[in-house]
Image (cartoon, rainbow, N blue to C red):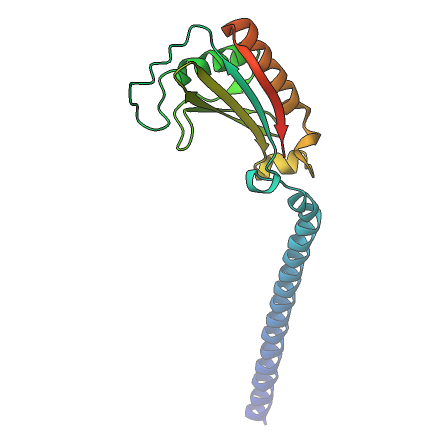
Length: 200
C-alpha cells in the first residue's frame, strides 16, 4: 500500500513538473512574439516617419539646377601655347583657394580646394541642412582666360532628416553663398563678371 502511494505521488510530481515546463515554454514564446511584434511596429513607425523625408530628397542627378557665374581676371595670362593635363589649369586653384579662405573667414565650413575629375578646381561648403558643391572650369582662348564657377546643393541622409526639402530653391543658404562668392570675385579678385545665371 505504501509503495502504491509513493508511485502515485511520484507520478503526480512528474506531471506537475511537465506542466510547469510547458507553461514556462509558452511564456517564453509569447514574450518572443511580443518582442518581434514590437520590433516590427518600431520599424514600421520609423519608415512611416522618415519616408516622406526620403521622398522629398533631391540630388545632383534629380535637380539639375546649378548656379553659373562667368568671369575674367585682369591679371591672368593666356599662355594658350602651353599644354596642361586636362582639368589641371594652374589658374584655377589659386582662385578657389582665395574664395575658400574668404568664406572660412566668414565662418563657413569649407573643404580644401583641389582638382576635380571633370573640373579644374572644386570645394564644398557644408551647412546644417545642405551641402553646396562649388566647381571651377577654365577656358583659354588666344585673347583671354574665361572662368566659369558652378555651384549646386545636395543633401545627405542626416541633412534630410534635419530639414527635408522638395526643391533646391527652398535653401536660402545656397542663394546667399552665390551672392557672397559673386561679391568676393569682384571686390577681392577684381573679376570682370560676364554672366550670372541659374540653370535648370
